[in-house]
Image (cartoon, rainbow, N blue to C red; front, side):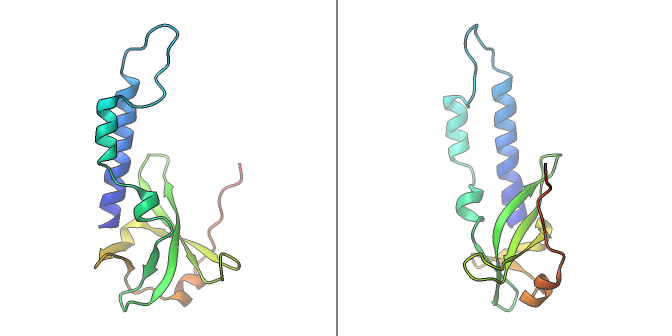
Length: 132
């Protein structure tokens, strides 16, 4: 399931970062990465870039309805929404929609959004990033 894999990967990264923070530091040095032992564990993890971002989204009838453009990590560090791009051509005129990660399923190697259509996603409110 997409949500489980995403949450597992992020929890692993948060745990690794927390472990790195607890290591003793010596004067004049700063730990900015993970240890060799932690690196081995991270390498076994799951990559959102390779396994989700840019991947097509299908409905339960096998119709391609969009593409995963981004994942939103909530302030509590959980992956809460996927940003799905719908319509357009080569990114021009594309309509981004936020979809709860819990709505996605992985079936036969595809990311599936049951009951969705291109028209339904295009009719959903357009997602826009907060201006900071």
